[in-house]
Image (cartoon, rainbow, N blue to C red; front, side, top):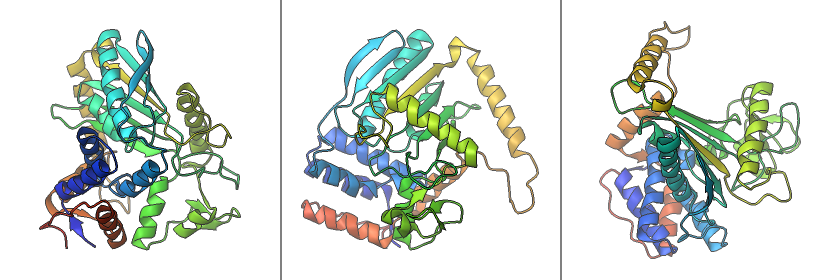
Length: 350
């Protein structure tokens, strides 16, 4: 499996996007966002998405040069028309706008309309936490297909409906981040499992007839994912399907009126408007340290906090390179060749 440096992957991704019609700055920001996701260990939302985005550009579902525009705003609330451009750009602009509104009003909420796949939500929630705010990002929709069955059912009617939360903690610059789908696993994880030739654990997938399966290929043949946490995750998924979706001008993914994309609500809470910021950080850190100090149960080496695996992955992959399945690396190189993009020599790749 090739180990490729982050800088090389950013260069390749950016060059492909520029060749596909994106301005230099947009191409760089999107490629960098994807590779940062790889560094965090979430390969399902990383450089593997370049191929999908290029297909969307070719089909005119994604307009690579489009920049977000404010559609309307009132007080602490704004709606941002992302104009079918790269979702990462819309989410980055929306996150900055939510922070500005929170500075002024104590809370800011931005709805992303006409938005494509936004990538890893933790990026945007974490950005707000680094501004000494609480960041909450809620997303529904899909750029793939309806993929999640309701709990107790055998027909896919929902999307994976992810969310992210982040808040500042301690005296350092590493926020506490929670980021996951309300499905038991993200759509892209199926693609990663296929590229790596491995089966899924039990309890995640149903085949097209609603029978339990561990074969990720069944997902491409009409199969479906399950919600996490049985009926509790199902209920949360329903709320995620409706609230960000409809408030952002979309419809639920099972509706005939749904259009591809990730309707997203970005909320920023300015801690200063609610509590003394340093006390908030101190108490948060003390609580997290108590959690970490709990003795591990049988079968566990330690009590892990949300975000710790990502931090460790980023440290390791920044040093050794990002592992890419051979099929993903070959597809990326083939796409680069099709656009006349040179693949730079990489001392880490093997």
